[in-house]
Length: 299
Image (cartoon, rainbow, N blue to C red; front, side):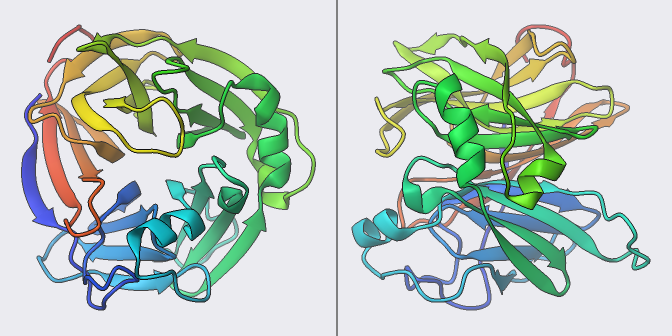
């Protein structure tokens, strides 16, 4: 599957890195012509207009600034890896958008979330109860993607070279938003193929209208949930509604896709994705791709 570069994620003000662009995009939502992106080393939401090439605007999610130094920033960052749209129940404003950002949980500082009611408010939520429920189900916690199916939130926990499988865990959305105790269910473990001896692991997920789930996956040579590693491959994976692998399409070029959105069209599935170069001096990019036949292996 060929990736086509559309734009870099430039913004209208410098971030903690000193650069006026998102450098580690990690989760995305598309609503009409609006693109919403969280970056794992920033405390802001980026809002972009897909109809223009204008820089995006920044919406603060957490007060205060992160350090300019990249290593210090990595220790203190909220590590928002997940962004998804929530139902806007009771909202009369059709232009309003409700989003949920979730931290990876890979360290104690990364166990926060944010409910974002645009254009106005942000409510931070403590997710320690969520990660306490997940911990017994996974060898190492590192949430990277999520989809909402009915009242259940399906969370995708990323593997690594030490623990190659990625887990799919279900939790009730209402309990997560309340921040109280909740029960978590391990629905499946995904043992995906290797690329040059490095396993593909999940970096994001999106739900299609036909009930299938698309995953962005990367083969990154790291053996834990904290350190980055060399990227040796990337692919889009299609799961059926039963959470079984239906198809795998390698990406060219093999970029580290960390945010994914997709829509079924007459000529195939159209994808938008954002990338993370693991380099604070390099802008994240927005890319497009088309998968002609999701139901078959290859692409």
